[in-house]
Image 1 (spheres, rainbow, N blue to C red):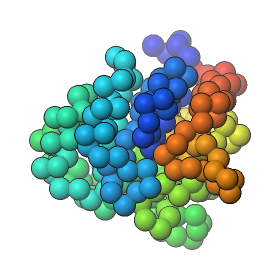
Image 2: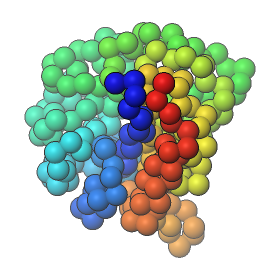
Image 3: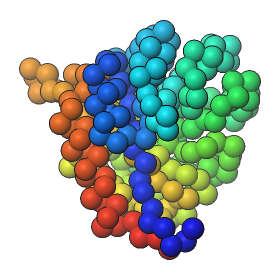
Image 4: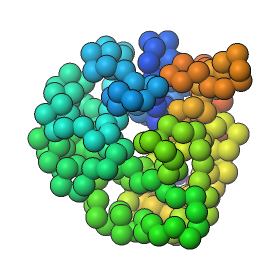
Length: 236
């Protein structure tokens, strides 16, 4: 397989409307994220997530985002949303993640909250080893609450060899995702990108309307990822 070109996978997260799900699929997204954390501004109920997920064609993966949820509710969610991957974005331990994933019969991603302070002690390599049973490690900026802050972190501070598939999140936009891919390509087994606020519609105050996506921004984001792939990702 060494002669094949690589491709950055794309997840569009925080979707709440049918038209946004359809737009993300049409643009070429690989995964669609539904936030099942009630304190999030992008929260959808399980019934709503299941309804939206039914619109996904084969090979577009639904991802269910949880924060410190109990195992029974996670298992129930997986019954309602076929083929979903679990994304743990809170304070879940290795045992918490494994137990929920095993009982649900699903793969899981574990979010790593990366501090922006260069002096802060966070060992991503150790984190990846600890969560070796995760399908991927999602990299997000450490913000108050649990993600969704639309904030980037210093990508250059990440170690060069992380023993995991990586999903980069946090403040990505059509304007900066190419730079992000250039900075992170080759640092993990593979690279995916996860965008939410960066493809949301602008409100009257110029701030993103949380949970409401902009079709043009979604397509611009995907084009930017593909352009970066063509420039930076070369088969090794």
